[in-house]
Image 1 (cartoon, rainbow, N blue to C red):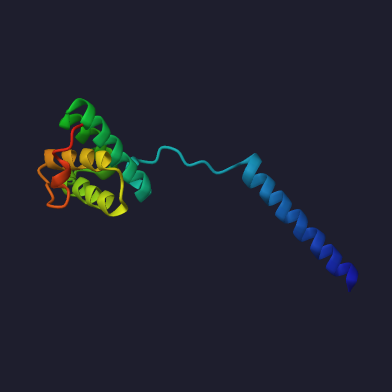
Image 2 (image 1 turned 30 degrees about the vertical axis):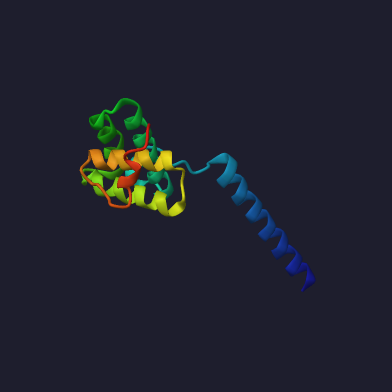
Length: 123
């Protein structure tokens, strides 16, 4: 009985060890070529923030749309950016960051009473 348990335990340990080796080193799974639209929400927020930063620098709304379109598709980007600006207010982010988001939302025509006071901040 003890011998059977020992053999089963060794077999289980070998199976787990071989499986981990194969999965991590020999043939690890790789996921490439995923479209930006499958990004996690945190990374989508980061894309909005980067587009707002670039828009604050160059004022090119077409380029900002080009940066956000692969992430969000062909939807109206204004409400998405406005929502992010309002969340930035709720999160207590620095006023300069909120101002950049609010200016990008306003450029899309999606102004917000909560974010409008940040529009007048110096860039």
